[in-house]
Image 1 (cartoon, helix red, strand yellow):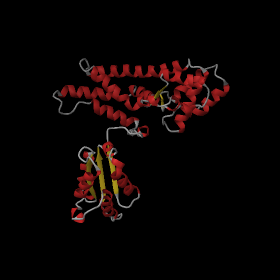
Image 2 (cartoon, rainbow, N blue to C red):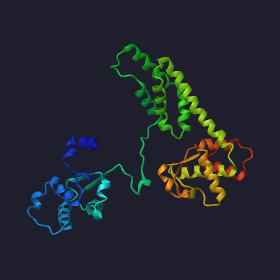
Image 3 (cartoon, helix red, strand yellow):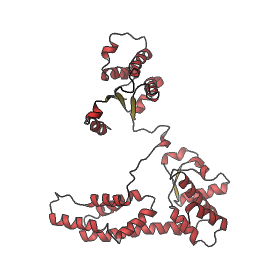
Image 4 (cartoon, rainbow, N blue to C red):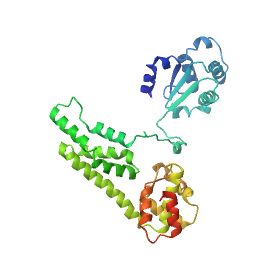
Length: 333
């Protein structure tokens, strides 16, 4: 956050259009101290002057009126509240409520950023944002991380190594990457695992070793895909129905987590089948902190790709026609 603010301050068109107020839960132990520091950082001491306020709320009201007097053309006031959880423990949380009220009512251009390492009662609403890189961009990232820098002490070794790095991203190995990239739910971390595999073997790793290592790793990843299919082929009809229902939910909600209640509202047999799927690692809870949540409402993540379910359905000759039609309608033909 500090680095982002510093970078923004280096741009004149941004630096001249906002005021920064920094608060910290360790130093501003109550709302009165925080309010005085806000007054100081906004250079409003002259406005407050020798005024005597009867209460904290009166002082806060006066300061907020000064802030509200600004229009849309006024400078934006950015409040960075570090150790945000400690401010939540203040009596009545008066300062926070009033700051949020000004921000949400658009009475003045105010931005409040709360920073904390503690999860709140809203922790189940976390948003994990990942860069949406294309496959070619991921290959470029892998090459960049594996390549030796220009200042590496041995020029010959650097050139040989970097040349071999480029080789493992070309055909036919590239086709294996594409296969795993398309089937794996964790394809965003595939190359991180690949890099870790090579780093662990750096003691014996020579340029000629890279291609063999890449091939062996791709075989492992492909065999994991086959393992899923073989394991799914042994599922009961009820368990397979649940998997198809979960694939359906995953498609509808664009990969968002789900719980048992969303998958099916039914008998204990269905619940037992759902637990069996969790034990077989077809699904897993999105967080260990959900252990205290009632089982039916724990958010789960599907670990099976729709193409794997499609292959299981295609291979199964004993599958009821209705279930097969449903599977095709969900995962595609």
